[in-house]
Length: 100
Image (cartoon, rainbow, N blue to C red):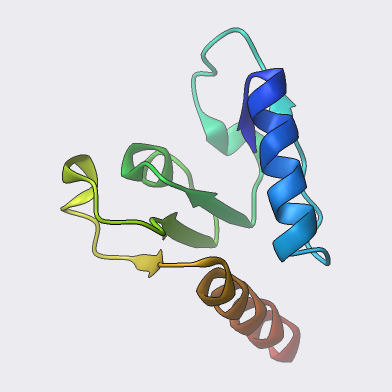
């Protein structure tokens, strides 16, 4: 996850509560990284489609638990509408990855 310190602390608390088995790697930065691909992510979950499109992660999930934001209208990939749905999508991906 990316963001400022307080933002990351809040995200980690939510992930720990709702997805305790997922290993989260925080990335704190006061500068803009040229590409998030340098992070070598397998899964990216974000609430802004721009961050999903600029990443080469194996699994990209748009997280919009409240409503579809205008700037995300063109997203045709996976969308998680709540934490349970997000957990299901990630679990299915991880189970399929282990089978292959």
